[in-house]
Amino acid sequence: MERRLHPRYPARWRVTLLCQCHRDMQQRVFDGITSDVSLGGMCIYSSHNLCASREMETILTIPSLHTGGTPHQLKIRVRASHTVLVGELDAFRTGVQFLGMSEADRQCLQHHLEVRFGCYAIGKYQPISDAVSA
Image (cartoon, rainbow, N blue to C red; front, side, top):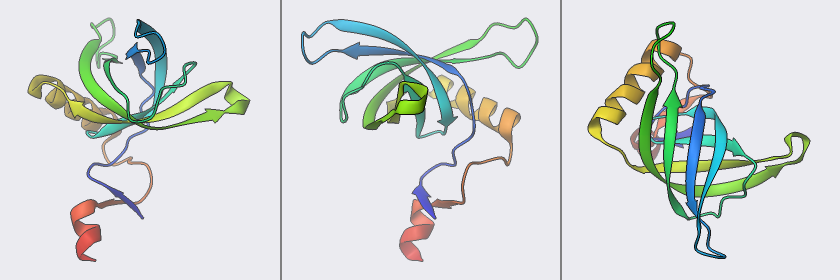
């Protein structure tokens, strides 16, 4: 059983990564796509190998629920927890933990996850507090 604070949902949304490269200290911008999203983090596929434990800014683009509507752009500070090369996709898969976002962005994300995916969480979800007491 997974031990997470929040359930993950199979969202395929665009994400922009604003990464301070540790080699030359230059700010770089990379595009990615999520494979799953929760209120506590997300899994991102991108062409860039993000350094584990590095903090960065991201912009998560959530499509509008209405045809022709304006997409929502959420600014989220994250920390990369792990990165793996997925050879058959020629991309890196990176898990990131959310460190900070505005309350309005958090409510927007929660709303979209609930409306779009409802009870379709990935895996067998068990909150950390329940797992510790079990």
